[in-house]
Image (cartoon, one colour):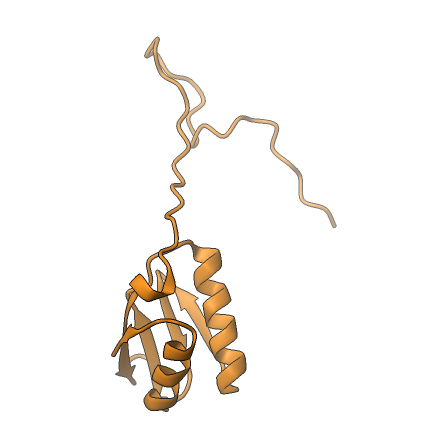
Length: 113
């Protein structure tokens, strides 16, 4: 089944405005991805909220969501594990921090701890 496409302009839900100089604004602001050498990634071990399962959380990535999900996909494939991205963080479902640090440093992320 196909989804119906809205013919309404993307005004953020506003249908009518009494302000004479009002124009719709695009709310999405894409952040530019910093080069890997300038990124400062931090890896944290966590079991909270996961039913006791171990996970590594990578924080500090500065860039677009597409670049974040591409990095997560590459890490998951290289490590042979699962994971996800959410709110600018990468969640890796394993507990091998040393191997993850080596992998990130080989990709150019030098300031990784």
